[in-house]
Length: 229
Image 1 (cartoon, rainbow, N blue to C red):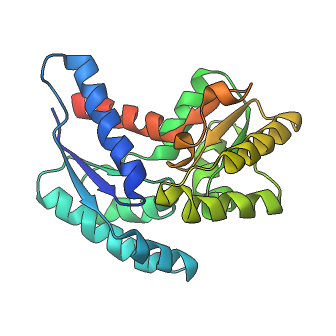
Image 2: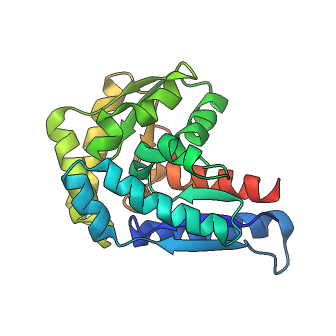
């Protein structure tokens, strides 16, 4: 089994899900008392958020690359960035280390392609929805991407940092997300990417009538497949 290096803490509440899902995935394949060999470098989310607010992605790259380099030196054979938004710097991180970064958007694009869907809506932070790092991986598979309107994007971004990232899950916030998803479905979305690792803790496939792509679960599955490859 290959050792995984998880860069987490962005936020800690979703890093818990990564740890659980990866261990459950390994155990499902191997049985018994077999679980993942992994290391977690948990960031201070406050440092990341301050850099986000300042749009200082070089500072985030410095933090994340330091963590990844330490994990590689400790024996990790691949890096798992436990957040969608942190993949904004994934392509810059990759040449800085000698082990692969398992990219969340690549794994998600593969999952969508398996269902033969061509028009997908993307929810996440403003960085994830508005910048190209996630959408480019989908475009490589000829997948068209819709995003919510500006007001809805602002609401999603705010609640990710001020509610979900703090472990707060409000019924009225859940209903607003459902309303946003329904609007996107009316615009032709064939599925919805839950492109923030905290969103799947707020709602699931039983809440809406359209396929949801849980990036936390998809990314964790890709990490399991690598570890056992």
